[in-house]
Amino acid sequence: MAEVTAEMAAPLEKALRERAPRLGVHRVLAIERLTTGLSSQSYSVETETASGPLRLVMRVEPEHGVIPPYDIAREYRLLREVHEAGLPTPGVVHLEEDQSVVGGRFILMTFVEGVIYRNMDERLADDPARLAAMQERFVEMLARIHDTPQTVLPNHTSGEDAARAEVAICRHRLERTELLPSPIIRHALDVLHEHAPSAQRLALLHGDYRLPNLMWKGETISGVLDWELARVGDPLSDLAFTQTIGRGLCSIEGELAARYGELTGIEIDDRRLVYYRLLEMVKGTIIGLAGAYDLAHGGDDLRLLSVARIAAAGQAIMGGLEAQLEAFLET
Image (cartoon, rainbow, N blue to C red):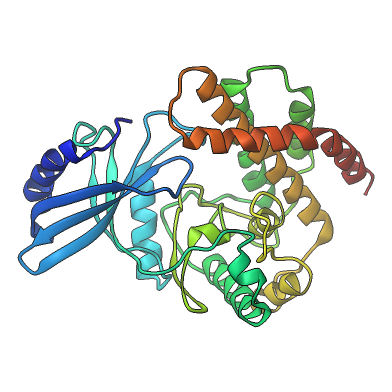
């Protein structure tokens, strides 16, 4: 994907005038790259309309990235559906299929006001009462996501099919980005495929549910961002993500997991959670390896350094992973 610069404001402005006249954009005043996201890149776009200034967010599909396959059109349709269903997501206002405008297909969304917190944010760690209130909102929002109907993402006939589909995606990503042989990861994928659990029910999953992907106004969630990993699967998969790759002050475990169970009626089955924690560990390690692969092959996006760190952390836990696999198989 080409880097979006001030010089590209003119082609963006032209495209919006011609293909999105309903927005009423007269001028694109500024394009600023945002630091969030590790794959699709987001930009703040300041525009001038007949009604006054309008700030939008542009999310651009990468030509290459660490979590393929990419489909910004699918993300657009999903965001439109979940927004209409009442979730606090950005409103999508335009899908651009012409890659020549900014170097990749993109969507434009409304700008959501709010504050973003890190997984281990000191502002929350130092305020226990506020943290407790936000943890409750964090769990409630995930329960709402899992109860939201949608028709965009493909469904699965069983929990095993959904889990095995994830394993197959991981295997494909590993094959295209493996710099050195990874026998433990491959063994883990074999085990995860063979022992895919049944889900109590299938639901819409966010896939990357963590504090940095939420916007907050006070103790209220004003926006749920970054839906490119959304899928249909076992809700416990999202819980396992908060306990592993997305681990932080709002990890859904212990009393928070019990609260999630109360809200959804879903049994918090320990063995299935162990399975999905293993899957998330493997998935995160493979994504990290993809970042390292892109760096080794000339990638110059600085975000890849952050992604590659996941690989380093993942490789560090691989020894422990083998022991956890054996423990899982014995249960």
